[in-house]
Image (cartoon, rainbow over all chains, first blue to last red):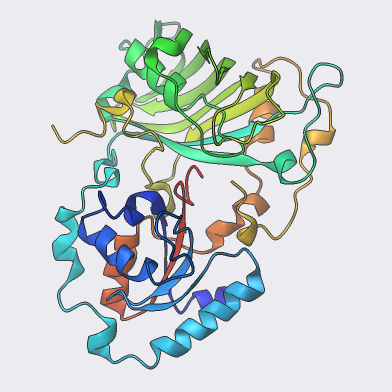
Length: 316
Length: 80
């Protein structure tokens, strides 16, 4: 299958924005709608999730929503056969699509090239017998999820005390703490969830202490704790302890290494995060590590439209 | 969500082992490694996905190749 896939340009994207006929009006959305409305899910109002093979001009070569490798391989073969029947003027756009890039207002254009980008991984942690209900077997047992956290160059610098002297310590500003707590210390292990609002942050503290200085490189130790909770019908929350270490190059103005572990307890559930029948408190782990900047890591944070992300993802 | 198409191995995670004790400098690495995705869990990255559909369109136009688009609710390379 990988050999077949090499005949294509592979791209991944979030479908909800692109399939929305009312709000998805930019060239990217309109091109997606052109073929998705002819694909495996055609009924109005339903998802358009799936795997699509399509020409750059938007001619649908084939589509399916399956995780069966054999069915995917068959899709790729059929699609390549259809591609081979298309004339060049049919399969390509009449104009250079790069000229339309400026018309596509998506959050990825705010990627903080000179800032701090972190991989964020979430996973259930082992449950001690007698202290938490056992996890159901199957995919839930091994579920994990990921996201990205973005910080501007100026915000990244705030993770390091202004004076690079061993022992100097400072608390991270509330704005950065709230971004971490509201948008990233969340239970998305089994599926998409909701962020917390800033008034649902009950406790948030993260300090950075200089532990070593080697020329321009400053080593810091990060330590803190958070508690976020929402009461009511969809009561849920997390209480986390954070510990981490990082190195920052003062001359380059960027992190060289970054690892922050958050472990603690989650309880409750949200509409889509798969916690039905599993709402009791149980351990969770969330890891923040430095992204390498590959194309796969340039996706905007899931909650990029939350107010906590306004300083990063804003057109003003 | 389950990225079943690209996981070829079921990784027996350390869920069957006892959890490390409280998070501190001595247990930091154990906790980190317990959370971090294993190589098999990241096997979907063996395909060099471009991060947006339009990136695929631009490259497909330039190289005269068809696009293979993986579309999910939540970005497949991020939070689904």
